[in-house]
Every structure is written in C-alpha cells, then in structure tokens.
Length: 257
Image 1 (cartoon, one colour):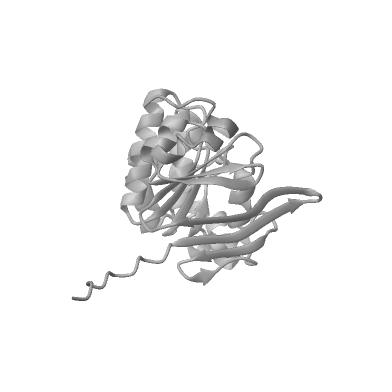
Image 2 (cartoon, rainbow, N blue to C red):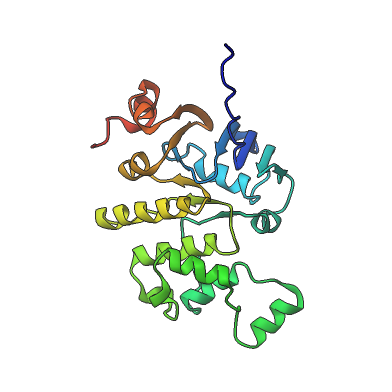
C-alpha cells in the first residue's frame, strides 16, 4: 500500500540567499542564508559587531550587497530601498527616527506617502494623509489614543511602538525589527512580545533582532545566530540556547527560563 502524499511545505515569504556585505576589506556578512515564513517570528542574535544591522541594511536596500533577496517569489536584490518598501519589505531603526514635530498618526502616514505632486500638495496643505492601512497599524499596536500626540510626549516603550507602526503601515508583508526592545524595562519587554505575536498573527513575517534573550527565545519560532558575519547556528530556541558554539560565541550562560 502506497504512502499517502503529503502536501509540499509552503515557500518562505522571504528568502535571503548567499548574502555578502563588504566594507572595503572587511566582510560584515559572509554568504548568509535566511528564510522567514508567513506568520513566522524569526530571531537573529549575535554579539555586538556580528553583522546583524548590516544584514538588515542589505536586505532592505540601504547598503550594497551580493546575493539574492526574494519576497514572495519576487527578486528584490538590486532594487533601491524605496522599491523594496513598496513591495512589502519594511524595517525599524535602532535610533527610532521619529519626527518630533509631527503627531503619531502623521509619523506613521509619512512613511508611505507618495512623492511627486501628491506629496508636494500634502506637504503644502497639512501633512501626510492617513490611510486605512495606517489606522490598522495604529489599532494593532494600541496607539489609537495616542494618534494626535507628539512622540516626545510618550514613554520610550510607546515611542518604540510608533516606530513599529511606521514599519507596518502600507501593507508590509515582512517586518525587520532592529533592537526594538532596547531601553525597555522587563514589563515593557514582555508587553512588546505580545505585540510581536500580534504582528505575526496577521500573516506577516517578522525578523526580531534584540539583545533581550528572554524576549527572543520566548517569542521566536526559529532563531539564527550570527558571529563574525556568518550563521553559526539555526533552529528552535530550545535547541539554539543549548548549542555549545552559541554559548561560547554569545550567550556565555543559559538565560533564565
């Protein structure tokens, strides 16, 4: 009796193949392969200087690289950053990069505002118009009541959420979060974990880069470990946290359960 056929696994939403970044004679990323599925939370950890932000910069088109970046079957490598953003590939920034003279809602709207004459008219007569996708991002992150406030009137944790909302706006398919929990206390970090789960629950793919190991190992479905620009381990968080190479390169000791 023949074995029943199993359905093929769905293709990853984002595929990074052989990505290499060089700054002169320095290799920041060396032949990196990485995948993120729809609705999947993937962690990327590594010591300072391992090349994590360089990887995000390269994938999103902010630094030159070789290799392939494929979003939902569509090649994006070689495309400028704004083209990748419109295709659904978004990121956050470690420094926040918020506009203090704009409201929270305007900060979110401006990231997906069309340029050309439409953008000029919006700038001239009152800022970026809000869209349904912008409002959905604010709602998902619980920022509706803060929409009319300025970022500098918010706590650090809520400012971080505004940065994430900007990445979610415009129907983003994959969001790369670069140290979004930096500076947050334990309660804020735990609450942010719920936010990440909610993002993945919409079907988006999420890449989470952070030094908060309890956050990463708790919320992620898979974790990649980067050291000296190369992936040294990948797998389920429980497997990665016990990998001798990971402990030696980064963790030093197992994080609290």
